[in-house]
Amino acid sequence: MHQLTPIPHQVPSIIIGRNQNPWLEVDLNLISQASKPGVLQQIDLVRRRSGGGTVFHDEGNVNWTVIYPSADFTRDKHAEMIVRALRGCGVERARVNERHDIVLDQGDRKADSDPKDTHTSPYTASSDSAARPLKVSGSAYKLTRGRALHHGTCLLSSPNLKFISQCLHSPARPYIKARGVESVSSPVTNIALSNEHFISAVQDQFSKMYDHDRGVEAMPFNDELLEVTEIKRGYEELQSLEWTYLQTPQFTLANSNEVSRPVNIDLTVRHGVVTDASIAPTASDPSLQERTSLNENLVGLTLHKVTNWQDELSDSLKALPSEEGRRFVVDWLSKMLPSIPRSGK
Amino acid sequence: MSGAFAGRALKHGMDAVSRCSRPQFQRLRTQKPAFKPAVRSFTASTRAWEKKYTEDHEWIELSSDGKTGTIGISTYAAKALGDVVFVELPTLDLEVSAGDSIGAVESVKSASDIMTPVSGKIVEANSVLEDTPGKINKSPEGDGWLAKIEMSDAKEVEKLMDADGYRKFTEEADGH
Image 1 (tube, rainbow over the protein chains, first blue to last red):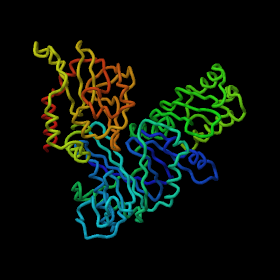
Image 2 (image 1 turned 45 degrees about the vertical axis):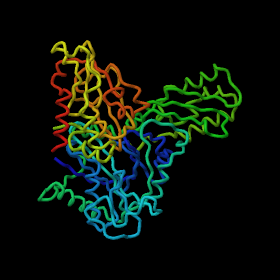
Image 3 (image 1 turned 135 degrees about the vertical axis):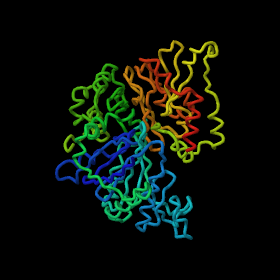
Image 4 (image 1 turned 90 degrees about the vertical axis):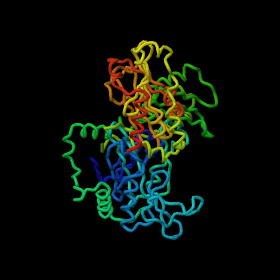
């Protein structure tokens, strides 16, 4: 049984990999602002089940998914299927690269390459060439008992290419050391195809690949699927803030590489909860008692539930001797760990 | 149905990762497991201590009292997965049935579940893997073990493949 699912996207969304850190990968300030009425547009943030890095979806992107027996798993076979579909639409530059992504080559046209070779195009330049290929589709995989899932994005006509890179640039990046998986950023471009054209080309290639003589029978992707208990449970889990934030691999957030800082801040966060904290003035040493009171207040804190750092720290901030220090701590934490919107989920 | 990393998946995975040549890999694969119980040849019952394998490419090795087992992924699976960059360990005291997921590894954009070969209760997780996930590639059937389980039914181990049976299983999967 092989299943192919094109999934439409209405709301622009950022999708992080299974073992990624939202505070590190995403500018959560944009997520929170965008959800306020009248400010930009709503952006959803989701943690997916497959591995890999962070991607952006919007209405100019089509996400494709193939589920098939894990005994037949290879990382490239369905990326190759997508390249065949793109070439069928006249996109000769498309090929699968060594990271299992699909890129459009930007080199000068050379002698025709073998059209069946999905890993080389007539425009493939040498790796040291300035004409870097541009990424149009990224792959991710999930393997479990008996089943393999391979899905990928495909940038066709996104109006948000600049905005994408803005969203994926977190202010906390210089201060976070994280276990898990960091994204590898690549220059991207649009293919300039309509969603319908791409979807029907992929369906054709899928039919050819699996010898479905009568073509692919399209299954509606709608709320009826939620009548299946397991699907409903998974669907609800994926939408929960707990799944998005508490599944974050352990990380530390520390400002020790910030040149001018009146206060040293060092937090350790496991499963989205602060497990160790140290906040102390850099200039003068406060008494151990004072430091303890502030740090104890932070340990046990669930980061994504903090809506206002001033309120959260409140009385314990008094352990810091200077007003400058107190303001610094509140401002810095508010910027690095902004409040997460509850609405729209 | 064969397992999560089975069959041709492994062959193609190896091609893509090319961590070692195929002849090298075949030599590696035919090596006997490093651990051999000292009393193995004395009686037939000690055969239960042998390392056993699942079709999902996990292994289990029983302790000398036969009550607990150490679980990991096979050398074959580790090579196919490629560089492991993150390991999700099971929580202690987790009660599981054979085939349940007890953790996961991420490698080359793949999140792969690890299934327990037997039923029981998780009594230890190899926390070294949290900071050094690459240990799974360096020593998948030794220091890169994943968890220890207190078995609820020791008979479940008997249904699993021994090293020889597993080698044949992987060769057949590669061959088709």
